[in-house]
Each structure stands twice: as structure tokens, then as C-alpha cells.
Image (tube, rainbow, N blue to C red; front, side):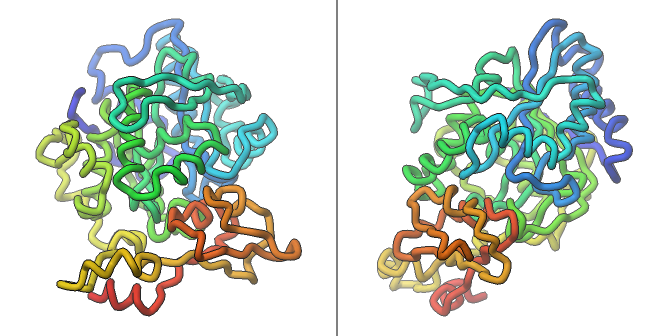
Amino acid sequence: MDNSVFIVRCPDYDVVGDKITELIAMMTGKGSFAASGEKIVLKVNLLQPAKPEQALTTHPALVAAVARLLKTEGATPIIADSPGSGYPYTERTLDKFYRTCGMSQAAEEAGIELNLDTAYDTVSYPAGKLIKRFEVITPVLEADAVFNLCKLKTHTFMHMSGAVKNIFGVIPGLTKPVYHFKLRDKARFAAMLLDLAEYVSPRISIMDAVTALEGEGPGSRGMPRHVGLLIAARSPLALDVVASEIIGLKREKNQVLIEAENRGLYPNRLEDVEIVGADIADLRIPDYKLPATAVEGSGFGRFDWLAPMFRKRMTLQPRVIKANCIACGACRDACPLKAITIVDCKHAQINDDMCIRCYCCHEMCPEGAIKLHRGLLYRIVNRS
């Protein structure tokens, strides 16, 4: 797969239409990126029903701009995604997400459809290194191609949500916690993500990094951060290599890249990538705030053999901020271990003995009511 990554500066969403045109022209030259009559799924990021300015989802201006370009090629684009873990994949849920996230407006402006087909199917993928079968939403299965329109965000579990992670959204909503239940460590989860990305094989991945999300993302505990970039590649892996460099996520903390190297997938290092349109030295953001989980390590030294016995105390513990909790149940429904209950219809409660530290509750809470607590042992182990 092409190892080129294309970058244009985009100061704000008011000019995103012109910048997307420039970006696609850089990628294709005078060639076409879609054929007349093709049905193209615009696979957006719709983690939560959040407003565009919260930077939790792909910005609708970018989606509309890509859709208009596809229509000039005679293709038929359709916006599709399955919402985050814990949200049922229903027409009612999709309608709420589309309206809140601005996709309804984007579809109207571009004159395209919003997917409301909530069917999905189990597909066989014998080439998968870890996962041989996936549940995939129908619009993706029926499309001629997928355009992967991801958002640059931090991620408490995988440390970064980029092009590869965004493809997880083709899994129907309430099936996602099952993958977290079965794949509890980052290495196995990354292996699944790579298998899925290879199965879906998006034609183009475009990252919305005009306003990104930093800190304790990818949900409402993260903070919007102006970056002013649009980044595109034919390889979602190549795009993630560059995005990881921009935000300063160390290679050893990006499990997707480590797993790619382990299985011989390229590109997985910066030297494997050709960057077109910018110099990486000018793009790095030295003070980009990464999630606290991205610096977790072991401070036991020669007593590291003790680490398995204290794993939970050495990691961040999700805790409910009762004053912020509205007892909506999003965290409960997202939890793969069913370790969360709603107490007296007032607030959520987490059973720490059952918690596997996947942080789905933290990711999916729309009110930012779940914080990641740093216990004493965690602070000792991760001391600087």
C-alpha cells in the first residue's frame, strides 16, 4: 500500500472545502479517486452525541466537503457509522447522533444520504492474524469503497484514536464491549484493530486535525486543541505513524504501530513514510497533552515480578464524580464486564474488583462524570 502521507494547513473549518480540494488534488494529481456510479461510505467518527465544537466527532464541514467532491466524480456518498460502545445501533440512536453532531446539516448541504439501515452481518476473514470473523454494519458491506474520515484524538486505553482506531466504528454499537471483554490488553486489542482495518481496507483516510482533542480523550473529559491540519493517506497505518509523531506519542506507547511491526506490516515507522506538503519538524507539538495512561510504567525495578499481583493498583482507577453524574446509564451499557450499576436512579457506581481498566465508561460518559484516579501505588510506580 502507498506509504505517502499528504498534509495541508487548514486554520479553521470555514476554509475546509478549499483545503480538502487541495488535499485530494495532492493525492491524485489529475487522476480520479472515485468512479461514476460508485457507492462510497463516508465512515465518520460519531463516538457520542456531541456538538462539533466539542471535537469528539468528525467535523460536519469536512464531511460535506468530501461528499461534494465525490459527487463531482459521479459517485454516491453516504454518511455512516455505528456509535460508541454502549449505544444501541438503532434508527433512533442514529437520528439523535446525526442531528447533534451536525451530520444532518452536512448531508443536507451536500445533498447526500444519511445511513439509517441498522442491519449488520457476520463476515469471514480467514487472513486475520487474530480475528477470523467480524460483525460489520451493512452499508460498509454493500459499498464499493470506504472513505475513512477520522478525528485526531487522545485515547485513554489505546493512547491515540486515529485512522486505524476509527475503523472500529464499523462494528455495531453493543457488540463493541464484547471485543473489550475478550481483548483486555492493548496488544491484543491492537491486533484486532489491524485485522479489521485490513478487512475494510479504506480507499482513503482523511484525518480531521483542524481542532483535535487532547488530554483524557476520546470522550467528554478531553479538551479541544487547535492544530490546524488536514492529513490524508491511502494507508491508515501510515497516517497514524505521522499523527503519532505530531502529538508526541512515543512509539513504544502506540501499540498499533508495535503490533504492525511484529506482523511485518508497513509502514510502521516514520522513516518508512513519505510526507508530502509539510516538514514533520514543523508539525510536532511539544506540549500536546497526552492521556495519563500514556506514561504508565513499572517503577518496581528488579522487583517487577510483583507487578501482576498489583496490576490494578498500578493503573488509573475510573471513579464516578457523583455531582456530575445524571444516571443516564451510558457507562453501565458500555462496560464489557457489567461492573457498573445505577444507584437509586441517582448516580453510577463502579465495582473496582470487576473492572478491567478498558476505560469504556470514561470514554462514553457524555457528562465527563468519570475521572481517572491516581492512587498511591500508581503515583509511586509512575513517578518521574
